Image (cartoon, rainbow, N blue to C red; front, side):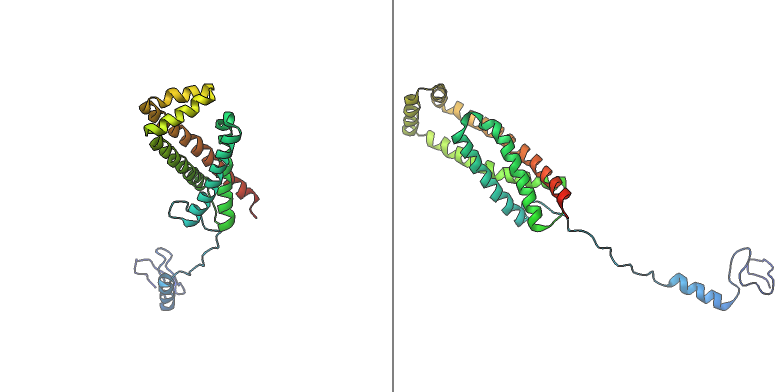
Length: 214
């Protein structure tokens, strides 16, 4: 026997020792069937809960962030009335707790797997709704105090109190432009005070949920 590659084969050889070519027809057919047979389809491996996609297009995320944000802003106004001197210090843990609650509540209600990034997003959304409420109220105050009669009434009320804060308010309201600039600067500072701790709280909420999730 002789292979097509020129090697001389023994009589009972089924494959060429040089090139490996099969010498019998049934071996050729079997090898061709193995080459052209489709690969077996493996079933998909089961995965865990889907990853959460936190955005303003996610209705559940929007609903949870609005609810928690309104509760947080109510707590902020309550602290402003009860302890106005320490409100700037208390606002950090307040909105950190708000972001933590929003991430934990969303993950518990939906069962979706949240990452640190999605926790920061829902924390940002929570603080944003609260900031919008503050911004709307500040806009109404600026519009109201732009009226001369309203501004005179407010100055008379501040003068009747006679405190150092009232004197600063009088000086500020006597110059409407300076008052507007201070309001804008205060809103920028407030935005940072609300969003950063809330985003951090959302990340901590995701971490807490992942540790205690069965």
